[in-house]
Length: 177
Length: 145
Image (cartoon, rainbow over all chains, first blue to last red; front, side, top):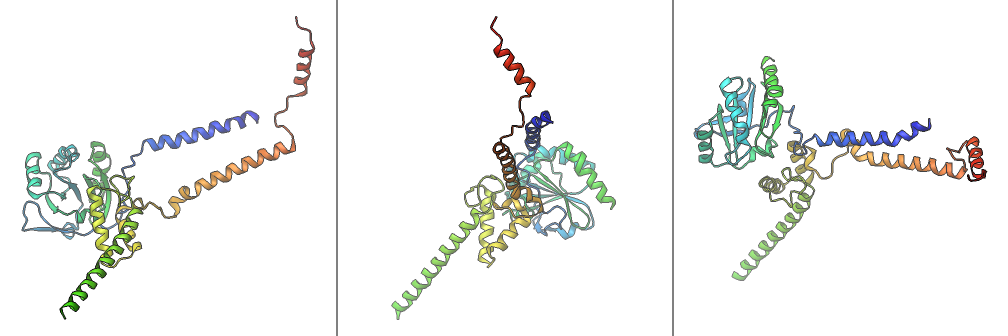
């Protein structure tokens, strides 16, 4: 009994270490989005490459799609870009680009240089739509289902693991639904 | 007539300036309660991040449109979550955050009370067994070799 009592501080210490250890593995920059599970915020924006045309969220109803927020000034967008290009080649799911707080010519030049994986990109020059979507760091990627509900949000660059383990399985599941 | 017009103009201008100052003060106070998403440890009022500038602009336009502080906060929480609030709301998921320290404090008080009570009663939880005392006395009494 006495020796058990002596173990209490050790047990408390182990619990503390457990909390700290779990905390180490978490990224404080990843703020969970309240928008997951909610209808995607509506937009109706001019297209980057065809400024005379628009695209609205209503146009995407009935299909599963990704919204990828990018900008030519965004350094880590370059990291995920090859993956998006691969994804476009596989033709699994349409990716709409949201060109966020960018200059149109800079954005188009960036796509010419790095490849254009987007079905099309729309222009959010002042970041208003970005605010509605809760964007706080570019790149961000949203998975939207057939009913226009946001199902997943990737904060920061898409990684191979995120794509294979989360995004693609989710897309397939949603496409079946 | 002319001087009257000028006086009127001046009065309007100063009224406008006053309401502007009041709005500035109100927004400043509100923005100090909101957290910048990008820098995380700065308030919206202090941050120079581009997103913070956008959000300040957004907050101002909402305020000018007649939204009160609570509505503006709700607007931001709907988009960015409770994270934007420096003062997190009390709800199930934040119970541990709000009440955890008090639970720990109460636990400490209980332990303290238990120890104090035992000391007062004078009984030691870990008395040296009588056999041990005898043994010690025997050792002390035995002549040094």
